[in-house]
Image 1 (tube, rainbow, N blue to C red):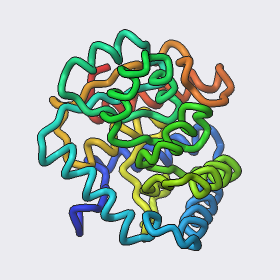
Image 2: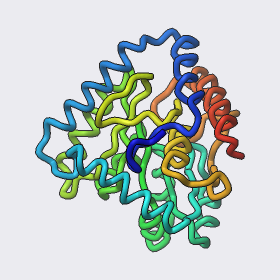
Image 3: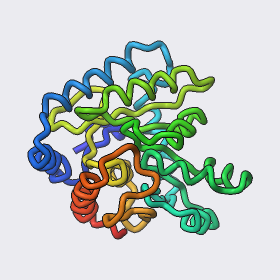
Image 4: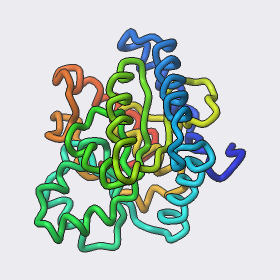
Length: 252
């Protein structure tokens, strides 16, 4: 149960317990996830960037909740296999966008005026910092980022933080982790890949299932906007993504 409106607790406890199953499946160490999470928290809170303070990170969550939930907006989550025609179609509707990491790259393929309209609809980005040019473009535009820590991405999030800190308007941050422990100043709404974690976040914010659409969410191929990855292992990861989306009862 949430202690505060800005606590992004999972809508189902199984979303967090599944993270333990995933670690066991791949042979990953919980301690590495914890170390990365604590290091990310320390790195962000050691800066003097006001939007990155713990108070302002909570305010960012509250602001996003107001924009999405209180206004009863439809939400489209853009996955790594998003195609231009899917995005163009959704722009004709009063729908807000949430992007899974590098999926923001599709916005750069749109005509300029359409692209700007799409950027204005982007409520936030969900990233573990390996999305490449699309993620960097969002960061430089000051789009709020739900930045995730896991055992082997410390170098990636450090590089992204450097880019964000040097931007004229550093993006608001919300920090997420994938450990079963409570880490003050961070959230674990559940999830594994950027796409299903985006769905977990949107549900934790309070958006009902019927107002969520999953676009570019494929389990049979590695989407063109996926970050650097081992294609064979990525397909296995997408199988876990499917299990998480089934728990959330989301169609894709």
